[in-house]
Image 1 (cartoon, protein in one colour):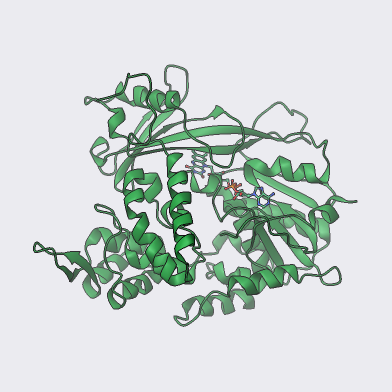
Image 2: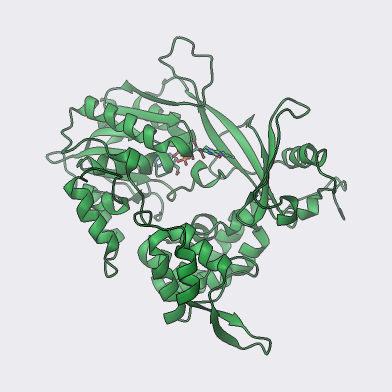
Length: 471
Ligand SMILES: Cc1cc2nc3c(=O)[nH]c(=O)nc-3n(C[C@H](O)[C@H](O)[C@H](O)COP(=O)(O)OP(=O)(O)OC[C@H]3O[C@@H](n4cnc5c(N)ncnc54)[C@H](O)[C@@H]3O)c2cc1C
């Protein structure tokens, strides 16, 4: 059975874009020149405040409904930066696109650098070409086509730690070009805190990688040498690990060399693999992968590639001064000295966060914050608002508490303890949006706590050697 036929039955947990129109929800306007008609329509829908994303059931039905007689042009496996970029590029060219993700959008490596379904669903769907964008897992997808497929991924672990803001003055960073063992270490301001990390070390592939204590200690030691103040283990607010899909090209002459560039190959008929690269190169990765898929399946796009200049949702018409307008026109809820919750001016930290995260759609979040009594911060010292939970559930398929703390906000990555404390309120809002019963709410809490255990902040760490206690 050819690879494409085998992979037509990829078991996966999520269906996103079963048609060009569905996937083009993510499309904004291309920069310069006339946009293809599909993109113009998508732009109008994004701008329409009354528009809502299609229900998940409708998208699943569309994906499952692609029959042998009317297959999708392209089925993307993997909903990280690469897979979503590929789906968007293909949809913008007028192709019929589906995307399957076994966990949640960006749940893999893509959420660990600087949606979901209730697992195990099978989408008996048909597609002319499969694009394998499974990141570190792309060899396991290639092995569905050929169990003897030679491995091309060299998984490499990158560990980051987050420290209080006082370790990095605003706008300044530190790079150690050569640590004691020859690696690079860095320290940078990040979302109001300080992030420090180092380059990779080899690892095994797992969905929930955890940083080892020696890796964390290595970073602390590397930066301590350059700072006048002691960098303490007890200052670590969050620590996590991600797996970079570094790659060797099995078709290259020099198969021993590991590359940070991306590789596109069709080593099995109808299966195009795209991997390696970086977040910042997802546009060129998407373009190259879709070009290869068009060639492989002799697909007939209605227009050329517009990815290079395609602005994502909220980017079209965004102005850097938007945050000031938000502060002038919107209110948030704050606790007064007497303990009462009262309306107050939206402070700059919140308005900047909304503007940077949602772009031109920030005003929709701000409107929810003042109209629906969802205007309080979720965690002390962080700009995330209750309104964002409702907005993301209603408009962006946020279906779990983990999704909110890890990817819709970056609370888990910034401060594990603050994320844990915010969970009950986040779950309460999600429950109201999704009509969850008590059992589902309890399950969400358990799952989110388990997830947070993989982030080794000081409070989470199992420090058994006594070396760090009390520091
Ligand atoms: C610590 C660290 C720091 C980084 N820093 C930077 C940086 O500063 N700048 C930069 O540009 N890049 C950076 N990167 C690299 C960047 O994050 C990755 O290149 C990029 O996120 C990879 O995206 P991806 O979509 O290929 O893989 P992933 O995000 O891992 O997505 C693959 C998806 O496929 C899904 N999947 C797997 N198997 C299946 C299956 N059988 N069926 C359905 N779905 C499946 C997974 O669940 C996952 O969601 C960093 C990476 C790390 C680890």
